[in-house]
Image 1 (cartoon, rainbow, N blue to C red):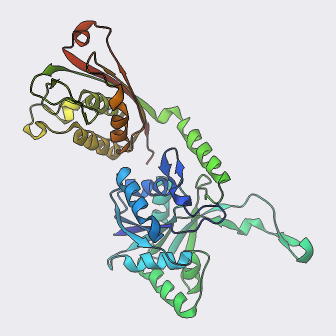
Image 2 (image 1 turned 90 degrees about the vertical axis):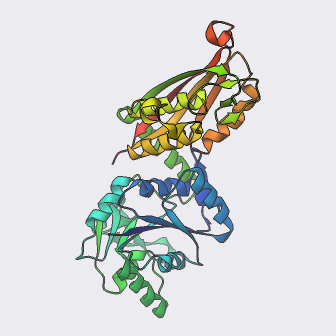
Length: 388
């Protein structure tokens, strides 16, 4: 079963007050990346298409690379209306697509649980599934001059969310009919409904909020912080590494080549900071240590960049549903001085989507570090378990 996802991110953000709404950073991550990541993590999803404005293609692409999103197969130019944008993406899907999920980038807190439940509800006897939540307020309809015309039975009403799931061929057929008729619906399900298709509602998620105004960003941050307060899902890992100096080697720390008379001895590039961080990451996931995954007896890792090992470690954590939240680390070196290179090191790690703090200290001329025989590093990583 081939399942494709369309992320709609082409809106003008009029009520938000900015055309760059979906690029707005929350906790250092743009809204559309928040919206994509749950789909990216699910094995049920084959590919993702993003529909957005032509002028932000490069920025969208840069964020996709920065946050290591692998499943985005195309970036599609949006249309005048949301329906036009979705249709542009539908026409770009491969013919062998079975299921298509359509999700608004303005709903950045969509969960993997919700996505999986929507897919589970899509059977061969129905044409579409939409998540919804009951209305809790009393609903009135209003006549002229703001006079109340009556009270509506809220028991038969639902607030509809995305993602919405459809059989691809049924949905694109409904779109073709809608354009022949000149009909524009308020969501994708309304097109299926108009042409006789069966659409069922599934349980939505109250946390799956829509970002409409800038005030909604405060709600989003509150929900994120509240989620982090669930300490049962948090894990801490500690990492330590040390290497002695050796003539004729480059000194690589945090992925930065530092001019010095000696480098560090090791099977790989001996990047002591990255090695400590890898051990902290693996520790937070309960996955052993760096030697278990990248042994120094394996010629495949001879002189390899430790940043490559870091990338593979992050992929391993993702596979095991572990997300690193924060890393704090310290480099211990008498010489050379590290402080001027720390910004470049931090930039290297941020390219991997890692939130990090780096410090550097001497050892007050004590021990092997004080005697300038080598360099050591420590790292502590806070991670969370991603529920599946």
